[in-house]
Image (cartoon, rainbow, N blue to C red; front, top):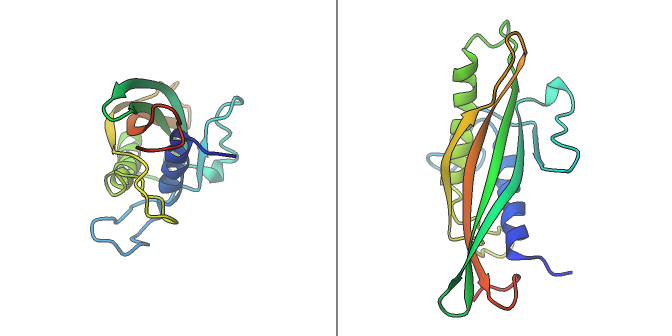
Length: 171
């Protein structure tokens, strides 16, 4: 079964986020992560299943909309908007920073992973799956006072292209 360029981009983006591990596991300059995400999941119709409290901080990603325009040379240019939600359980006895500082640290690691993987290179083939990834912004999601869970939703744009006759093929 053929895999569309869109799905290849989403699968590789998921793998990039799942590869965030505290420290500098790849040994690359500028890729020192402060955190490890025990759970990184793609969206399902059931909603984000975060499992147990041991699985936080957790990340959920979902493709929410896509724009397509005809491009030159028989290609379609696509911008895929992806929401990346970061969930935490803030145990203030164990984590003395503010919730805002805790989330900011996690968002920084995701941004660092994106900046170091802007073309979503397929490690098996060396193929660049997209033209660029852009962090457009984000916001904390509302939390009731006293609730131990909090989170931040990032707006990400993955820009890629494919043939105007075959979404699996790049011109």
